[in-house]
Image (cartoon, helix red, strand yellow):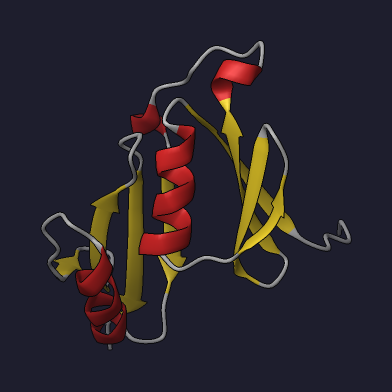
Length: 120
């Protein structure tokens, strides 16, 4: 077994400043690292999402629909109440066929962000 200490997801962003604001202000994830090309937010200890300004790299932009960020939460109702105050789009709690209640929204790049709670 690999001895993994943390988990990092890196997202290349064309709308870098808007994405930083979304992950920090809408989702409430604290910024734990920042420089002129990369900002990292930390939704949970030792779990980071890196937001890279794609215009400052040699990489080509990838399609946002290829990525879903999924977060299990203790209470979908509390997550809904928190997000409803901050997110400008339409939010609803849905039942998913795999036995979960979930909320889906999109970041400024169009990537799906989902929050879910296992149904009893």
